[in-house]
Amino acid sequence: MPDPVILWFRQDLRLADNPALVAAILEGPVLPVYILDDEAAGRWATGGAGRWWLHHSLASLTRDLEARGASLTLLRGRAETLIPALAQSTGAKQVHAGRLVEPFARERDSRIAEALGAIGATLTLHTSSLLTEPHRIRSAHGTPFVVYSPFSRAIFALGEPDAALPVPDRVPAVPPASDSLPLEALELLPKRDWADAFPELWTPGEAGAAKRIERFTTKALSQYGADRNAPGGETTSGMSPHLRWGEISPRQLWHAARAAGAEGQDTYLKEIIWREFSYHLLWHRPELPEVPLRAEFARFPWQPDAKLLHAWQRGETGFPIVDAGMRQLWKHGWLHNRVRMIVASFLIKHLLQPWQDGSAWFWDTLVDADLASNSASWQWVAGSGADAAPYFRVFNPILQGEKFDTDGRYVRAYLPELASLPDNLIHRPWEAPAEVRAALRYPAPIISHEEGRDRALAAFASLKE
DNA sequence: TGCTGATTGAC
DNA sequence: TCAATCAGC
Image (cartoon, rainbow, N blue to C red; front, side, top):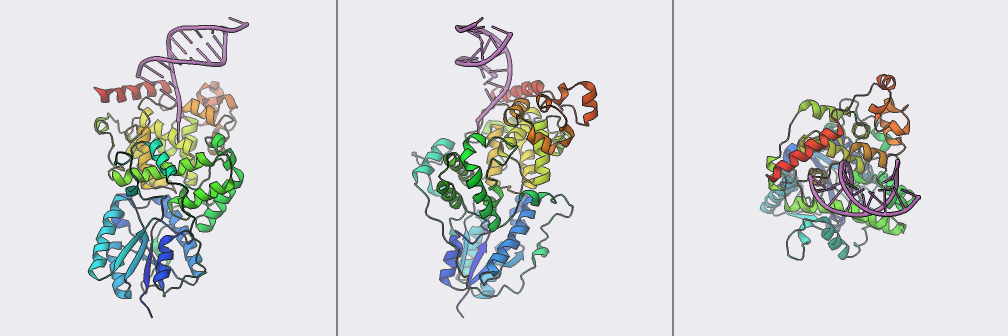
């Protein structure tokens, strides 16, 4: 029997358009493996909501592989040790995987490549979860991009991405490793019942991803340019968790949007390119998750306050659009993009809480939590990142609510205690008559918008001194 | 992919 | 009185 080839799944839990899978099949019988490696990830080990998703996605991948004659080996521990040991014990000379951008993963992969080299084996990394590799794209000056628009033009200038690779009919494979664990042994599901409502919104796995993009391109894409900011209906693709776990590739999304021939496709492609831009930033600035990219923000006068942070996390700030968003996040593990900007702006600017605290909460509660997108987006709102929103751009949560959730549908869906308020008061319940307000059981605003805004502007102004 | 307050001009 | 416009934060 020829030597097996290790196919190491990381953030590309799919069989379609998977270059590592195609390369592995060409070289011999495949040993597909997934490793839960929390130690290497450290502080950025997958959060609670992500682990729920991962559990179901691995179950789906296991079924899909078995339908093609292969078994997924599941391991838990340090990949740095386990991958070379697996190569050693099976005689594998080749390991194929998709390239990762997270700093801890890059360091780990280079150590693994070295360890494999010492036993005569090779790690080959493929472009799998991005349109192009961050190190392959440079501005006209030969430097990394730090502004979105020219970056976006550079991506479009690459031309249409290659066609997606097909799903192999069969995956010739060797039996799973003898120490492969049952999925339950990874202990990915939450012990408490907080993820019970996730399945109302989500079907993790490659098949769920395919269904969802089909629904989006036939129903909402044509209106995407106009409707995508409204959080109250199904106006966005909802592909972020599928994309984060690699159940579909960005170029599959690209081609799906193009094939639909619908009006909103360029706007949608630009959102995919925002994600690409975040990965570009993380590749060139690995400190992105922890440190403000603009140096002056190191002396920002944050006012850390556990009570304020907690009120925001639980959706008890007294601003309906903020609270509805935070309840949606808790209930469904996801948040509409417009509302992400609103709640982030509120935490940072009105409450003066460090953006890292907001980023950490999203990391634990979002099913799509992704180190590049999450970190870049929080820095964007804080004004401390590359090409970030200017500091004086303070969202007014009342106006944002009235503009994008005009009929209050979104607020009523997640804050049933406000359902009886008329549309003209749904985003400003404190203006309701006192007896109505008393019956609502909804908190008064934690800070007035005007006071929060003035305080934020003063804090940001202090950076210039 | 802001918001606010001042100003202007139509009525 | 109010919508439209615009500068400054």
